[in-house]
Image (cartoon, rainbow over all chains, first blue to last red; front, side, top):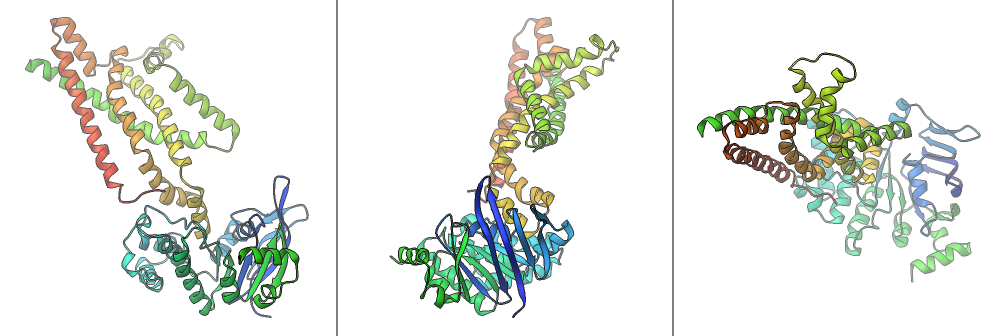
Length: 254
Length: 216
């Protein structure tokens, strides 16, 4: 057993009367890369949004590095106090499908803003680290550009740099390539692969099955708000048991 | 002629004073009202809605008169001569704040929810998110409608004549009545026009300054 970064127990989420997540449990260990796959409407993005606390949970527990962010009090969920929450929010970053960069800030400012404002770190030190991150993302030349001047792939790389600048223990990716042209998808997948090689803990919601198979340590297949199968990619993808997953995979590889 | 221009220029100073004070009051007050209008508290939001509806639904001229006459006619206070200036500032401030509130609301509601989500995940507080991420983008979006309002305000200052505030239009009317010449109106028109040309120029400069980025 490794060091658990994230633990989700019996997560339940509903919108009105529609239950979108039924009793989801999963855990992510340090250095692990988890890919979540499944058809649209299966609840995978909602799961990510609950884990990053963009959505509130209706049942279950959410634990980061042993600290309970959300506890189940039987009839619903209670969230940790603001101070604990601030600590917990430092532990993860999220990369959005639509990047959500700040359009009025340059690339460099996008990366530097949160470490300076939220973490109150020294500007000069943050700038040094931000430039290193941008170099890693192949964006050295674009540090002073604005998001509107960048391609989708470049914007997504900025948003990855922005998340990494906070020095999170883990990163979530919500369909990071879905808003990109196919030829730009590769550059993002390459970056994620590089992060995986550096043992960054990651949870990736993706439609790129072959990528999931290549880079993930664990694949989770979701449908209709349930986890249908999970396990090593070679077991789940190449040797799937359920009809649902078989049908999904054959559709995806058509 | 020179005499007319000097007299009108004095009136223009008062007009400018009304103009500037109104902006100083109405721009922040409007932002506050827009927050109340967007409040999750249904009662507060309703109050703001009623306020805006009344301010927009009745003539500014009438509002000025009500504010000017209310203390003496309703409450029996005797007002000083200076009160007419106070009434003008209150009237314009309250009225323009209602319009600005709706402009702010439109601007704030147009910001994609993703901006809030990205800020939340990065750990920004609500206040930091608004000040650093949302508001700068709101300003860029609302410059065109704000320019409209500001230009209207320049011309609306002439309404202060109804409570005999000695702004430019009041002065122009007095000279016309006394001297029987149309010239004061022409000169006043030129002053209003030049002032608005200046306003439009300043606003377009601000707009240009913010055009370094585009919002999707």
